[in-house]
Image 1: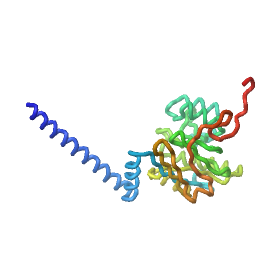
Image 2: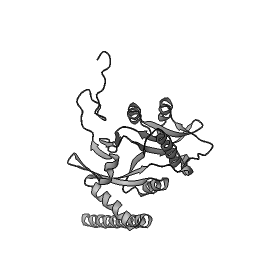
Image 3: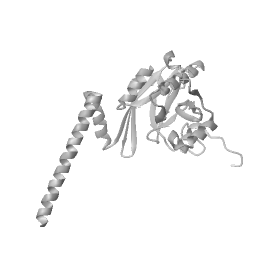
Image 4: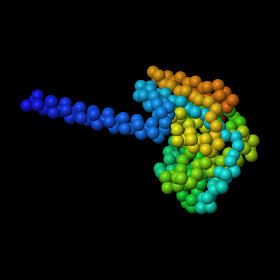
Length: 259
């Protein structure tokens, strides 16, 4: 009886393995049809490497001129740089994707948020930074040239997607920063996020280089390609700072009265 049970279990295991293998093959073929052979292989290769060690390729993108076609906002929305208190109120709703720790850090370093209001609702937003900014993983810091503004954390609520709000908001923010003497916006997209890369190209962004990030045995190794030099674009681990220094910028933090 025990032998019969083992044989039955072995057959069931083989059937499950066969089904899993077929599902994986269908998934691979679907990716090839959707992305193309080279893109699908790139994606699969990165996933295979990341099963062993953390490895990212970040494509740096920039834009220095705005497209007037993206300056027309649908009439129902109010586009604006959101005041800090307004942002805090919207952040209380988890659907808006602004956790308390993220918001506290972004506001403390002077980052700005450009968004679209639909009456009392937040339809979409994007964040803009002038100083080194934490990326994912959270113990990594992105640095960039002071002539540029770093655009990050673009978000459109699901009920408002498909209306080009991200492109319009980014273009409006770019126009504002250009008028204040900045050269343009910089950002990055992970190399296997092909949909986002296509979207960036449609908005007028161009790629300038790549940053390679690997974490091995608890230590980060990073490399920025030559094209990143013009933009001062690089990634580095956030190191512990001596007491009295800000851990993101390295600047001395003024002592509060009574401390």
